[in-house]
Amino acid sequence: MNVAGIAETVQYLTFKLNDEVFALDVAKVREILEVTNITKVPQTPDFMRGVINLRGSVVPVIDMRLKFGMSRTEQTVNTCIIVVEIDMDGDTTVLGALADSVQEVVELEPDRIEPAPHIGARLNTEFIRGMGKIDDHFVMILEIDKLFSAKELTEPEPVEI
Image (cartoon, rainbow, N blue to C red; front, top):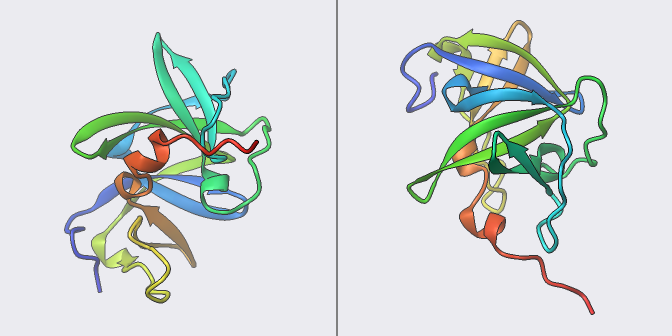
């Protein structure tokens, strides 16, 4: 069974968070950077590590591990920032996604992609495009446009007094 909306072979960039492999449509990826100086911005959500200067543009950097409820990403020789373009409320927004490592670009036929699992009504899996099968394991294919809301990226965290 193939996933609605995926009718042709698509290339995906795979990356690791902890020991899990995730994938993004390469059409959403602008570039991959080594980790550079990230400037913390006050009153932002925990998963927003800060901003970087990308050729004169301010780009927010999201810690994907924190976004998914994992431990904070520790910088290693393989840690990288995947710069993506996402559609947010009709506007194109550039974000940096902090990942443990980038793996490879893979092509997946529609028949190698299963629908996202339904894990009850209270758990939002809208950001999962599907589960790709590579060899004998699954790769979670992210719908990066649906992973973040404009509200969570722009509303300040409450300050405790």
